[in-house]
Length: 260
Length: 278
Image (cartoon, rainbow over the protein chains, first blue to last red):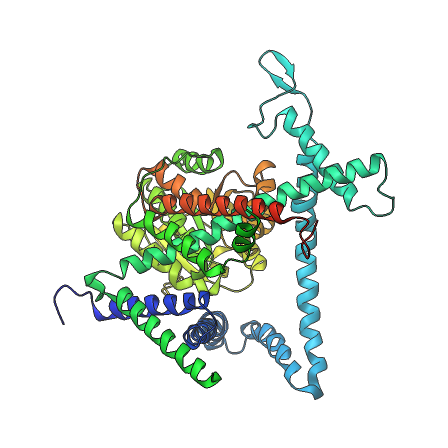
């Protein structure tokens, strides 16, 4: 191996990353076997990785090891066997795969739903509803150095002008989704205003989404540029060539099969 | 004009892909160094960390996986560099099983840069199931929730966790999130109950939905997408992959804006033609 090359483990990783990136991007040309190979590898590896980590983290670290330890230390104590209760509940979930005893899984699901709802509902109401209402109903006038003032600074979130915009936005959007009254006259103006607020929100969300997707593209391109160097054995240009040649051969084969 | 507009409206979409690829690739190969303006929400995170005394406990939750790496890894690296430079005790963890290896790698690399020792200056707890229930468990007793760290070292006697019993002993927390199992979950089950200060780092897709939390003070700062990471890199004075990507980001945005305007021009030129909406 030439001296300038990186260790074989890093090289293998770089070649796999560059190759799979190019295979996945080949979909931009059209659906093809290279893309399918990359897609299937992604799904398979993700599932395999998840299964192995779950086994080690959940089964071994959180169940088997503490259970073995507590039973080993005090085999006569009933407390040593407490972890068998969640283990049994977990096993009951698997009963869904056996139709005759599928009803047993309801016990485990009842526990999960009951516990989840009990824990989540008060917290969600507090965080998502009460706190947000609290922030929506802001005072219009704010205390400044020179006394009370209606803040006109759009950049300051708590300024009076922003409080007014927020109030109009919340009321008009809520009214837009209020279908018990016909949207005519003043109602139509309010609902229309609500639509404009929604459009601005969707636009902002879309803008951010574009930025996000472009960031992912930049990330992949940056890696491809890195892997194109001599230290990585010119992985990117070689694999780009392989991808293009394979696509060309595949395209010719497809056309030949389709006939004149 | 109409004939040209008709041809352009039906253009092969692969030409647009090529345009975007060129707009991304060229600035990466030849950066032109556009200025980066730091937003108040990113500055708030920086200022809060800057004010923390040495050896304060800083919890960072890597709530993402490799599919969001380009956006959130630069944020994580910048935050870890800042925390290690400030000599904070850093606790890492993840709610995303498939992000465990990535998070551990980021931690190890950033710690090595500053000569920080695992177990003494930082700990990566890894992943544990439960989501919100795990946060509640951590709020009651950190050592029951994580009896050992990612490298299977028992957590109870670790020097880095000295004096830390539960989430109430955390001085500052940030969740770097790519989805719902992240900032909102940390706020709902963590901060709201155990009263620690927290901020968020998010992908561009979920960032707009977090602004109501920022406005209401439920989080004290927000780093949004690659742009936010670039701002943070600028603040700590260590330009990294995020700053390097910002020229490409701006160039692609410019191409998209031009394409949107052109499409609208062509659409209005052809409006009213047979088979097209009036």
